[in-house]
Image 1 (cartoon, one colour):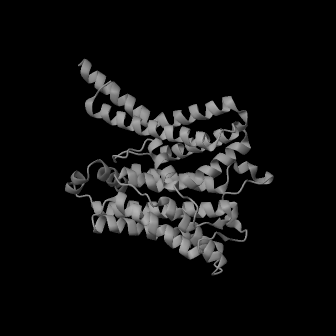
Image 2 (cartoon, rainbow, N blue to C red):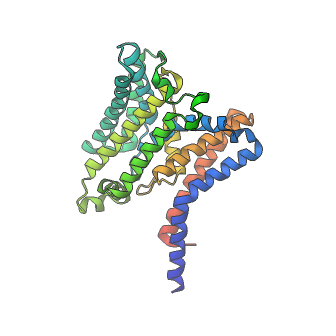
Amino acid sequence: MPKILSSRKNQNWLSWFNKFGPLLALIIVYGFFVALNAKIATLTAVETIVQQTVIVGVSAIGMTLVIISGGIDLSAGSIIAMSSVVVAWLMDTLGFNPILAALGGVLAGLFWGLVNGSLITRLRLVPFIVTLGTLLVVRGFAKGLAHSMPINVEQTWLSDILATLPPDQKWQLIPPGGWMMILFALIIAGMLRYTSLGRHIVAVGSNEDTARLCGVAVERVKLFVYSAAGAFSGLAGLMMMSYQEQGDPTGAVGLELDVIAAVVIGGGSLSGGEGSILGSLVGAMIMTVIRTGCQLMGWPTWATQVVTGAVIVVAVTIDRLRHRKAITGEV
């Protein structure tokens, strides 16, 4: 009986930690920098944090699905850059209106996500290798389309998606892009929790063979998650274009690591079967708070990289410990 009670206490603790651990970490990190410099608590600083979080956060929504399913997508940064170039190219070169250009950028991301998913499912290739290859291929196409130069665009309503709010719109609290990120996060979180597709994604990540024996269409699930990841990276590219007012084929280099790190910090497991959409957004915000805080403190770039890298290592270590405790039942 004592062992059973101890096991239940461990499970309750793990469940609580999985749900609220990332949020607690965000509060601690934010509080630490507020104690060092109160400027980070101003409305302007908060708005800046949200602006810088949106690009990684939107892409992290799709990456969460991939990681829960037991996969990985290293091409996210290249797809973000490619999408920003496509939107700018359609507007500047072909004269598309902003709505069609924005749709074209998201569809470009969806296409490359579909390519990733097709290669992984049809040819049964390792996701790491496939997406490492498409990372280079997509980046190359982006540079070719833009002739390795940023494509500047005229200011339209697309530029307002992540722009700093004017004084008469401060009631919105955060830019429209931030509200879009929250809306999509709630939709996908609801899909994961309340639909059969969401349960199938978790099942595939937990044990692919068992899921297949239970009748889950594993290949279709994988095709969906990689396509969704591509679409959300395409949407993140639209956000980046809005923020920079240009499509940059050399932008978002290494951003896929930030996206993956946001998912892991938010409670996602690289072993598959675990993850939280809202947790991933919190993870993305933690990284932004660290960078913003370091900049306000005047710390050099290398110090920021050391702190960010240390947080990622700690998050992965905690993930390993959680799994070890869940398997062995250790206290």
